Image 1 (cartoon, rainbow, N blue to C red):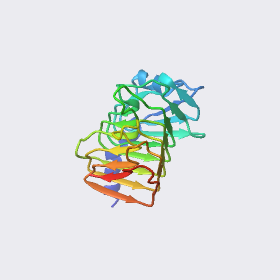
Image 2: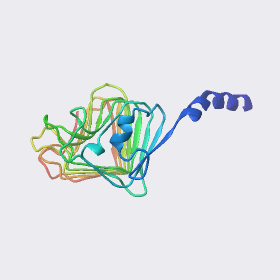
Image 3: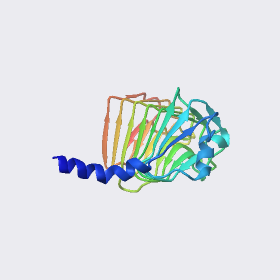
Length: 220
């Protein structure tokens, strides 16, 4: 057993040694998420702590391109306000890396010319979202269709999502491996679905989903 413990320690030691914590906030080296993104220093397995503040327009935008990131709002909930701006033509944050976790962030106002702007646009595989608040976006979360990857969304709120044409939603999960959706509050989608998912496996339980639109919930 001791030899096995030692082997596991040596296996994960490089990850422990080289993972970095990045601090974002008005009084930090990187005052906004956009500043950290533009610095180009975020590596696989890093942690990003974002101080509670309003980050508006361009300063709210970022593309996270590395894997296994952990991003958390601290000392309150930071608010990312798009205010007419977007990145990569997709929304506020684009996750191009795999298996990214985000916690305690507020996303609002995502709009793009194609009318499907997202608070979080997932282009990679795998995502965990906890204790976040999405409102007044064309999509709260929108994913691509990789066919694989596990998505977990819990303890979060989605409100007033959708462009209003029925093709954008509070949440739109594409063709992924699995969706686990629990302990969330989802309400007041604009014409589209409160939750739309094409995941191969869906575990949806212990949520409050207010069905106020014609088609508010869809699987497949």
